Length: 259
Image (cartoon, rainbow, N blue to C red):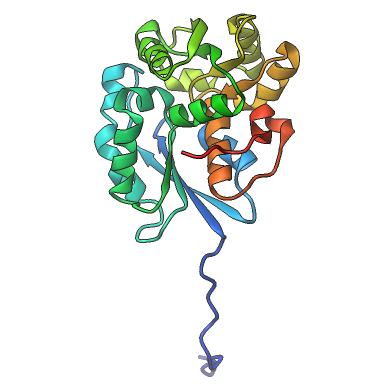
């Protein structure tokens, strides 16, 4: 046996920063989600902004009834993100569920665990994004069935938007939605955009639509808002990142409005 190795204490405690990173964004995403984390790594995460993820139970198919079942999990999902620590923003990453559960109910559930955080939903972020772009007449593209799409149409109409064209792809499994090729998303988007619309909204956080938003804009000459583009924009602006990043689309050049 060798002689005992002396272990030397340094004589003082390490200096601790207030936070490892200046800003913290929490994501509550579905257990089946393939896309949100990837998009937020690409568009949001940086040396200044940390993105922290919690997954909650979800089972297909995508129906209003199944979407509503996630509501009781939201508070626990938020609480599991850096427990007992504050977050600057928390984003619940499901567009169709945000319509069914309701933006205010989601905010209340998340605030029960993270009372100081700004709460972002894809629907509310999309509305703010469309308003920032000056859009009142919109076209909408969803991957959902008609049954799941209809409440979303009502949501936008109730908020004063005119829907010129609403197109749905008829899928009911969010894992299949994540597998739609970006080239096909762009092709469907061109078909879905009515010429008289001010902008196109592409719904669903599972869709890889954010990566082709700028391309669709270049091809159509109209602004494009996607679920993940809208939430990324909202989270960045709420964390004080006001940089214009046109490579992601026109929305990423706009300020975040008050209220």
